[in-house]
Image 1: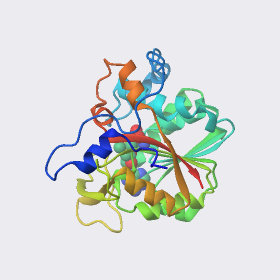
Image 2 (image 1 turned 60 degrees about the vertical axis):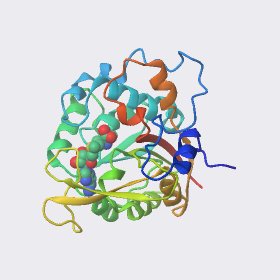
Image 3 (image 1 turned 90 degrees about the horizontal axis):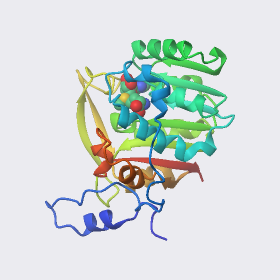
Image 4 (image 1 turned 180 degrees about the vertical axis):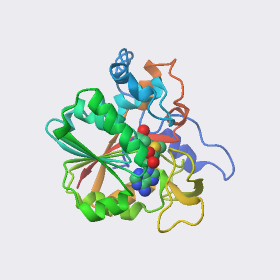
Length: 275
Ligand SMILES: C[S@@+](CC[C@H](N)C(=O)[O-])C[C@H]1O[C@@H](n2cnc3c(N)ncnc32)[C@H](O)[C@@H]1O
């Protein structure tokens, strides 16, 4: 059986002579949802608008609300009563979404302490029961190694491409015992299982933080192709179950801005399950 993400775009990319551009369309198969059914009429963050102001990192309304649909509305079955780990929990936006979706408890891990404080304050202001969440300030690799939390669902949203330590990350995720992993990440376009290297500066709020393996103010990071992600996941006992339907979301919300990376297939949302 061809891999789940196999589609015209990637086959074309594979057949493309070197140096020619890859067709630009959302990652994943074409939408099978009826036209109009993926319209996002009332955005999740319109109910919690503080999140439009608590971050400098891609807190644009359309982007946040379509991401909410792709990450939570499409996978609503995962959250009722679940213990959730939110990796790189930032200002708490997705921890809030997980709790609203019915999670029993969320542990958020975020390297930048000021973001942890903001997450804590925002959830309290929105009246979330304090017994249902905990935000820890620290490097995710260190915190997970030290605390070894046990959860049902892991959220790894906007983080995988801020590190090159992918195998270590998947090991830590596996050891949480989670049955499902929701991954939202930038990807490198192409059919081969490769990881494209980049460096990023630690000064930006949304970027990597310096760690034991970085030097100076930059961190070496890597964007895997979907094929590389599949391999990474399989070698750690996870299967890619499906990709979220960005094709349908973008078709039915044509005025959405700040989502070009999803539109051209440079970013995707994946649901993985323990094999
Ligand atoms: C692009 S933002 C993603 C925020 C949010 N999860 C989302 O998807 O909208 C990346 C986040 O990862 C955090 N981060 C970077 N390196 C980290 C590390 N080693 N451990 C924990 N958090 C880290 C950053 O501080 C930042 O908040």
